[in-house]
Length: 319
Image (cartoon, rainbow, N blue to C red; front, side, top):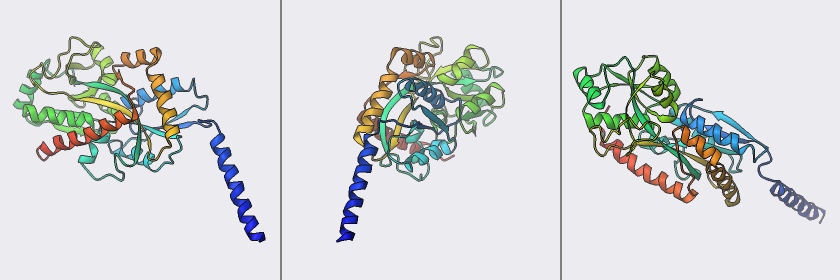
């Protein structure tokens, strides 16, 4: 009898404790914001901008945790193993939908995560070092064909969007270049500015300033239309490759099985911050196209891109 009373008492105490936990306001401690790429890249810049604005609403603040490597898989695996308590999120790029078609990953890109929102998209600039006698796609193709394998291009890693965009460009033009992978786009940009590599596709957020300063030369943009920040730069399509289009997107994921009320809170505050005039203007100035869609719509983008990139990757010749 005493044992039964003790068990009932224990259950009652546990129930009260659970109710107290749920009664605590969210967030009551800093939220860990994983960036699976190096500091200074597009994902990092966008994450810090959002976190800074959200901290004005959530006094608990954010901890930015850069975990570069493996095309974003290291940081993404860390999120997959995190508790679905709303205190760990990640800023992914569309590398999340590309890498699964290239190698086996320790997580499922759909089942192990809860989509929160597609934050923004950004076109890529086709850039060359100013010392290269190239001012157009025609010039680049001619030089590359005259010297097969002599030019090197950088990317933020094999399987990432910049890498795959260049592979598509190579396949459509029939040129050969040597790939130099980096642990993050910012590192590739540094070497391009320094002349250690000659070519790369880079996001406007991290390369446009270098192009405007004359440290790099932008010869085309990967979007279907020219961008307002660089109206004189033609699209790849209008420069001679009709149908070519590739943009990098950025989105926020939480672990799988995130409670609906936490998802609603996260989505509501993040999209509110993103679409505020202050943040929106800063995002546009940096070269991003702000989006802020629903979790369901973002989930659709992920599923659709997984199919699209698998088809593209399978069509590429063996490296």
